Image (cartoon, rainbow, N blue to C red):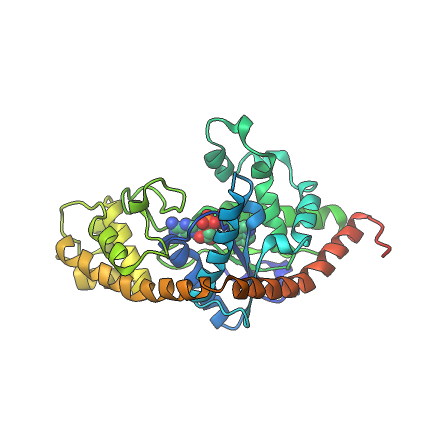
Length: 346
Ligand code: AMP
Ligand code: TRP
């Protein structure tokens, strides 16, 4: 669906917003599911705004030094993946105060019943939800604020974030309805491509994640060529050969995952990959995938290393991005206060 299919969006110009938490090192899942697509949207000439959501990160405990380092590292990963701070706005959330302000206002629009349906909260809070922070519960309303603060119409995310973008639409619609305005658009989740859900290299039924305790389960964007190749060689697989048709991957999550990763890295469809490798075993396919992964990812990790050597330069980029973001966000949050009846007299 394109953003103009929702009638209200015809009143807003196409604008992309997305965010990533700087709560750990980024993975191949983040690259294929998010960063690579972020750079592609920018290259299509659409206005693109990308945010390192440090306010979201602290909904669970973060060591302050680690958070600072990971925020700079994530910024380096964006730039190394092709997000150009001259053509996209790239910044960290806490530097633009309007995010926290609009989040509060939207906390008062969102309903408890809606929040109770959010599966990510249930997953992250685990069995002991009483001990979870209030921020973790309110997390989706902050995410709605991130998106609506820019009147963004398109939100490229992985499959796991679809529910939060749908909640954002509900919050926007309720706000517009309650106050009799057409102020917020209805943002569309963009979930495209073969790698919207990259799975763990150890267990094809689990998402590849920066928070998985096993480092072998993921490829980190900071991994060097040898580490990348070794992790792919050791990835869990079944003994059968690759099928020649997609149907043959149905009950083989590990094989399907590796085929999808290959397809996404090579800009091919999974069917094309099977056209080439169907009938061949993992003894052939894994080295080919390792070579492809190293070819695509090693330059990113090298460039990240170069950028990380000058943290002051990264901070300057984030500061300039925050200024540009603020110029869009400030008038929108001011207007929201006014719509809700607050006196704004300075
Ligand atoms: P997170 O790392 O949870 O902050 O996610 C940042 C972005 O990367 C979101 O758009 C996620 O949907 C996407 N993402 C994270 N892990 C994966 C994965 N394993 N496969 C595809 N996309 C992912
Ligand atoms: N919740 C998202 C995640 O964990 C990160 C995020 C925060 C985000 N705000 C956003 C994504 C706004 C898209 C748009 O991946």
